[in-house]
Image (cartoon, rainbow, N blue to C red; front, side):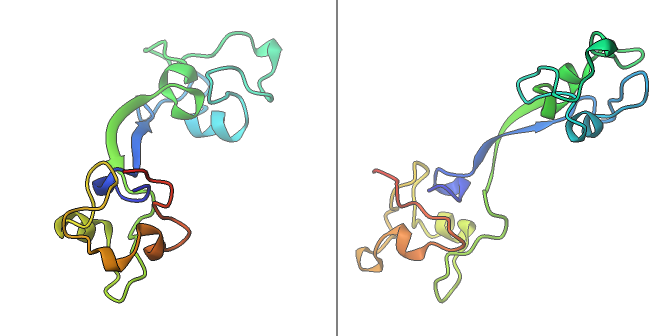
Length: 140
């Protein structure tokens, strides 16, 4: 189910800038590189990176560039864990079931299918879509 990690959805990869306090030798941070368009998510020089600046500047003492350290520049540290797509999501039913409820009560499986406690007369996950997020395309 696309919203909830417990139901086979969610976002599986997250990234953090590493080191967290990275800045180049001039004091520009990862946030600066992203906001100013100096790098792309593919690790290339962005549209606002001036060619006469030359090679990527490094952080003093580490020789790490934005491409090494910053998530927005295709660097950083990628972790494999899951985050629900919608924080505090609830399904819109009378009891406002959450992702945690679906997991604990066995309403869904980890691969996004109906769990053993899902009652057929409730309909489909799509019937409980809330905020535009549902599992209508899930094939079990």
